[in-house]
Length: 53
Ligand SMILES: [Zn+2]
Image (cartoon, rainbow, N blue to C red; front, side):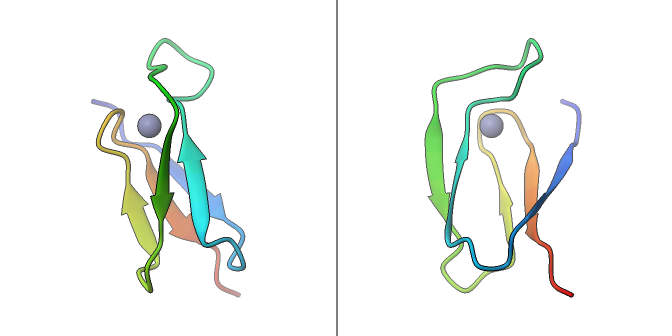
């Protein structure tokens, strides 16, 4: 499973992952940060990190 890191706007509380444009596509799922700054998609393993600056 490839690890891909996606920077998310720090104001976003919910993200949607559908696996992206490559062959790893999967049904769209939504995740909420819930005070975390990192989410790993259970389907494709993509990592979403809040882009704090
Ligand atoms: Zn995904």
